[in-house]
View 1 (cartoon, helix red, strand yellow):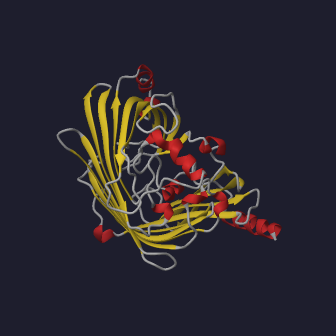
View 2: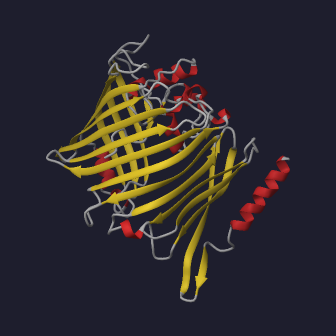
View 3: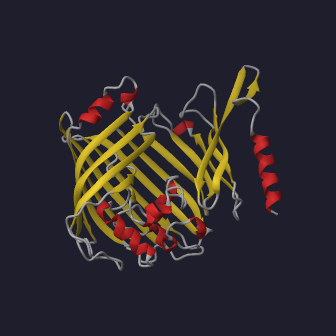
Length: 409
C-alpha cells in the first residue's frame, strides 16, 4: 500500500513540475499567468526528510498586488508515515470595487494538511494605508475556519492538544502608527468556536506595543498583553506563561513538528517561541509541566514586557556592511517581563511572575512591497533573575534560544 501511495505522489509531482523554470499560460499578447516552482526540503522525526515543491503563481509584472495570487507547497515524507503526503495552499483574489492604492481588499482561500494538523478556511482581508506610507496602516481579517489535530505523533507536547474538530470564526485587527513617543502597534484577535464536535468557546487576545527612541543605539520597547477565554476553550487555544499558545506553534516550521529542533533541546526548556504573555524566563517551567502532564494553561492572563536597547559595536559593524547591512540587524538589550491573571476565570495564575536579564537578537529582514517583515528573528536570552524559580535560586545563569521577536516593531 505504501508503494502504491509513493507511486501516486511521484506521478502527481511529475505532472505539475514543468520542464523549464516556470510555466506561463499563453495568450495572443504574451503570457497571462506564470507559475514558478522551487524545490523544498525540511525535516521532522515523523516524516523524516520531507521533499517537495513550492509553487508560486502570479500574473507577469505583478508582485503582491495582482489578481489570482497562488502560493502552494506539496511534500512527501521519505519515511512514509501514515500520512506521507502533505500540502499547503493559499489563493488570494483582490476585490477591485473595495481596493484603493496600497489599500487592498481581497478574498482568501487557505487549506493545509501537514504534520498531523489540518486547517481549512475562507476569509476577507482589508488594508487601509495613506498613500506610500507603509508604516501607517490598519488591517482587518475575518475568516471562517475548520481545524483538526488528527495525528498526535507529530506533537512534541501532546498534553497541549485535543483531537476534536473546531469550526471557528476568527477576527483579527491590527493598527500601526506613530504617536508622541514613537511608533506603536495595536493588535486585537477574537476567536469563536461554533459547536460541531466540541464545546462552544470565545477567546480574545490583544496587545499594545510601543517603541521609544532616545538616541543612536538607545531605546525602550514595551508590550502590554491581555488574554481571556471562556471555560470550554480547547487546550490548544489556552494561554501559557512563557511560550506562544499551542496552536500558534503551527505557524513556524521550526515548531510545527517534533524533531526539526532536536527534542532534547525542547524538553530541556531551552527553546522559546514568542507569543502570548511571553514571560520568557519561565520557559523551562512551562515545558517541564507539560512533560509531566500538568501544563500551565490559563483562560486569562495579563503581562508586560520591556526591552531596553543599548549600543552594540558588533551590531554597528554589521550595519556598516554595504547592501547586506540594510537587511541584517543585531540588537542587544536588557529585558524585564511580568504577568499574572486578573482573577475572573476558572484557570488562573495566582502569583505575579517576573523575570529579568539580558539578550541579543539577530534579524534578517527583506521587507515586501508594503514594508512588512520577511525573514527570521532569533534571540539568545539570559534570564538571570526569576521571582518564582521553583527549587532553583532566584539569581542564576539561565539561557534560551528564542524564535521570533518578543516585541516585533
